[in-house]
Length: 52
Image 1 (cartoon, one colour):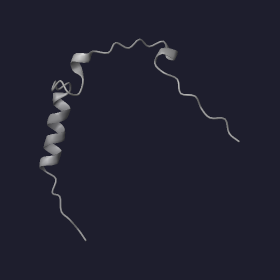
Image 2 (image 1 turned 30 degrees about the vertical axis):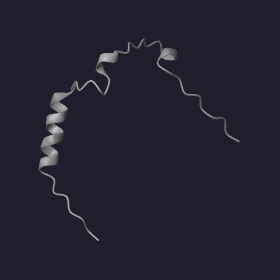
Image 3 (image 1 turned 60 degrees about the vertical axis):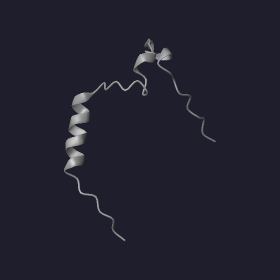
Image 4 (image 1 turned 135 degrees about the vertical axis):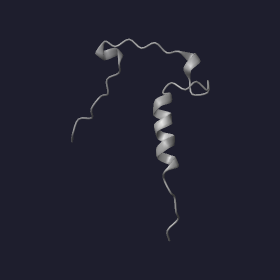
């Protein structure tokens, strides 16, 4: 039987994380506007169709 891997968190790697509650997903804040613009451009050129 194989040993299960234990996952290490950021704390184990010496990385300090600071959580900002103002920037959660419900805040409406767009953190990456250039990626959103690129995704919208790709989706606008995509044609969806239903195939049986």
